[in-house]
Amino acid sequence: MLPVFGHTNPDTDAITSALVYARLLTRQGVEAQAYRLGDLNFETPFVLREAGVEVPPLLPPLEAGAAVALVDHNESSQSVANLQNLTVTRVVDHHKLGDLTTTQPAYLRFEPVGCTATLLLKLHHEAKLPVERTDARLMLSAILSDTLHFRSPTTTPEDREAVAFLAPIAEVNDVERYALAMFAAKSDLGDTPAETLLKMDYKAFPFGDSADPEYWGIGVIETTNPAYVLGRQEELREAMAQTRARENLSGILLSVVDILNETNVTLLASEAEEKVVGEAFGVLAQQGRADLGHRISRKKQIVPTLEAYFEPRA
Amino acid sequence: MLPVFGHTNPDTDAITSALVYARLLTRQGVEAQAYRLGDLNFETPFVLREAGVEVPPLLPPLEAGAAVALVDHNESSQSVANLQNLTVTRVVDHHKLGDLTTTQPAYLRFEPVGCTATLLLKLHHEAKLPVERTDARLMLSAILSDTLHFRSPTTTPEDREAVAFLAPIAEVNDVERYALAMFAAKSDLGDTPAETLLKMDYKAFPFGDSADPEYWGIGVIETTNPAYVLGRQEELREAMAQTRARENLSGILLSVVDILNETNVTLLASEAEEKVVGEAFGVLAQQGRADLGHRISRKKQIVPTLEAYFEPRA
Image (cartoon, rainbow over all chains, first blue to last red; front, top):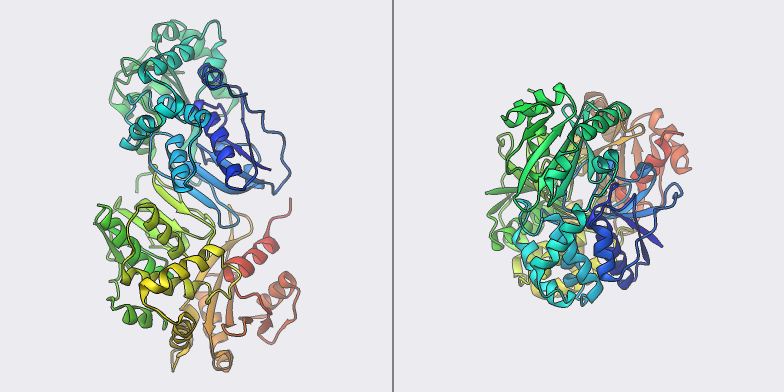
């Protein structure tokens, strides 16, 4: 039974792509089972409930050498802790290729689309397998989630075509309305502790000299209610400073993305981050925050700018 | 114009897959051009002549940041020298994933099949593009070459199906006879200098601690006339010792593979290699050679055994 899982701090794509890929593999004769690497955010339970699907279990400890399939990630810093002792036999991902290596030739499928689910739909087509209602619902939700219903600059024509193809099978008549309900669920943060908010969609990235990189933590909160999150700025910055110290990071950022207006106000833990973000993005960064305007994609806009900033000069 | 190229010391798959993938991309609207990273072996000119195709030019120096597509390899040690300064946007490969990283999400397509061309045929099917005669001839030749006409343990059912599909389009009526003619061309080594023979199908592999690996050079000569090659043993071992010193390698091997009988006698540069090969494979290794029996695949049988031998003990 091949375990299939997405990244730590799972978002909707990480969870639903594990479920859909595990089912696809099983239909193709490779028995597979979906797992998760952490707690769900506030959007994914809404999606699973609407689709009538159970939350996948936490990945149990695996024996050294066990075969695994990764979806929606490939870097060891975003995966299970002992990844380098496991045998990665399959990856379906839409991120840049990081430090992944394989010990044997494997099935790797990467394309620069907005969502892993867009690729999974393609795999169904290639395998000439019909898409079932539940899978359609899960893939549709993942694409709307990852692309912020096509607002993100990561959106590709293939993501739009996938949603148009999936909506009737998923029996989602009003895609706009469904997306807004998803985003509302995601934004219903209630009295969630600051540390939980920070870590909900959070990844550590290596920058600079690849032989001896410095790591930055970058969290994103996509919300239809940014005023609520920004109202908790000091509490969040305190959690960021603690995380930076505990994880031995060089810096830590938290981008508060207004989904509907497509804007990003990023919280900065200290003056060190203010200097880097101010210089890297050419913006005013002070009093713990920086207005990054319409840069709402961590993958396509935040991380590449920081990479260029930290790139070792020849 | 996207440059497409295979590995250094190109074999038939490295050359023909660059040609076929460049044509496929161009037909799909991505203007691409095939290049090579070195001199041809003795088999590939036969294949190109039979297909009526020109030898692709040597890759010219590329500007930093230029986009490139790789076929049939992914490790920097087997690629263009400044790979880390280039932007890899596409890879089609059937080897294990090595130290490749990408700066942006890219198109990566890896599958554990016997030949890159088998994957390229699949890409034609997925794009719903008919395979043309010349491309069919090139892909057929690459599959026969990489799998030693299905003798190699790397052969998969998909490779066999691909040859069955391609042969009529390629107008190759007698596949067995065509393969033998290819292998005879490859074995017509004439008075080729020992150093050239060594380097014809040669790759350096990292073993041991991934942070500080030792490198071994491993050459393969696939021939229908092993007696001729083994008759030049001392000359070849001398070239191996010189290469080991010049390239600062920990060891160097040259496997002389008898294509028709599927056997492998491996030349060893010195007692250091005799010790490692003897212990790793559990065979008698003396007087500069070791009989490795039916282990004829560098990828599937030689390298994994050495990797296991050098693996750092926990």
